[in-house]
Image (cartoon, rainbow, N blue to C red):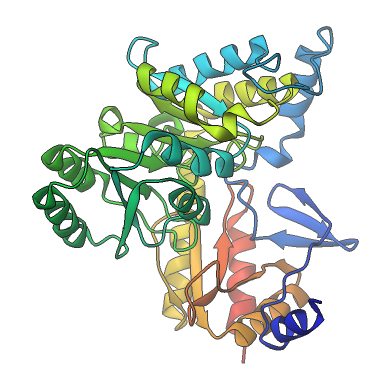
Length: 387
């Protein structure tokens, strides 16, 4: 029944397929061929850290942690390793257990589809940046609160919406949600301005730091920490599946808000917990990466160099992070460019609607601290030979 639809997707260059890829830090193997990998989110190169993995496996060799939770956290799946990791998260972000509580989830998607529907109810209103991740959009749609999507990074428009909401007298609670570093554009939210706005209108501010923690801020504590507004974020969402090279996600919020999520958040209530082995690995990585300031500096310097040189060559790019978009436009042209780069052993995939807006198909160049400057220069040389 889907043949015609799939054929139409293929004709437009929009057909997606699954591939078996072995990631090796800044490199990857696909179909037996090694590529420079510019498509992953292993921003600190944890995936290629064999020595760190060996050290971890040695540490746990006498404990044999379980490989499954076999139950939700509210039944028998809340292993002691959860408590240890959640304490480590608070320590990493510089909070005491009196100030905040951390909650670990199975993934960033689980976090974002669950937090807002649990916290914002009928009679509330949510204001979301128009380019927020699909998981946030799905969370908006699953909840009962009214929501509005304001133009990307347009804080004047956000204030107008909030003013209208306040004057209408229709809403009980007001929420604002944003990514800190946006996943497809690599640009950053002005969290200082957003904190001013949330205080002015008495709103609750939720910030998704998925592409920021590990990379920005002192010790990798994220963009909010770099902008010195960490304590003003009501709910901070982080992930282990990117810079931290593990699996799962977390939220840091006030203790009463955490208790509310435990009681109301469907994606935590009805999901089997994470295996203790994964929780221990996440804790090990958190303890390690705070000392990797040299990697963070190298990563951001290489990204700035790549962005600057691409712009000099005439490519449309942007952002200010380790994510460097190259805006191509049409779906088929983007696919063709990706194929050209792949033929030159650059693992880069086309990003097309609905992941990005129509007419904004692109290549999303994602750098890691495992990339050397000569890797970036090699990529630029290949770009220079595109027709």
